[in-house]
Image 1 (tube, rainbow, N blue to C red):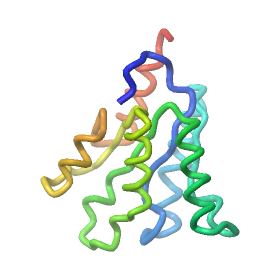
Image 2 (tube, rainbow, N blue to C red):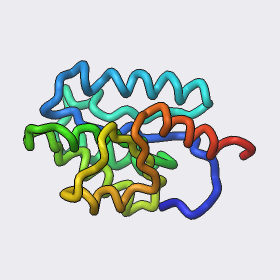
Image 3 (cartoon, one colour):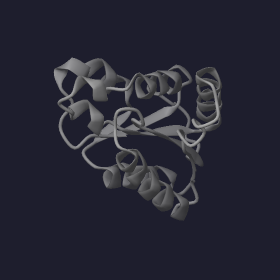
Image 4 (tube, one colour):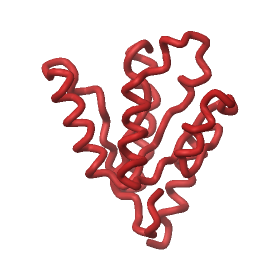
Length: 145
């Protein structure tokens, strides 16, 4: 967790891309991107680069984006899916990268996170039920800074 009080100026939008529809992977990111922009926050959006890059290049690019960001906004709704296939390793690794780099981890999940994922919940600084609540927390954190 970030210990300093610097404002969040750039945030990585973390959530599943694999095993979800293109619409599912993009819809929340577009909404978050637009709302964060109105707060003066730049969003790093992973997944756009996957067409022409190798898997190693994708990991390096995502890692570099996480390095540049102050925080991650994490969509954890995929944890509540009934299909195990929907638990993407990419998202879990991105969370681990940010945690290891002491980034602020702000997550949302419509349903309570099951005991199966308590370790993941413990890595997050904040977990709220909706993206709008998470965005409001980010806005509040940045006010007066």
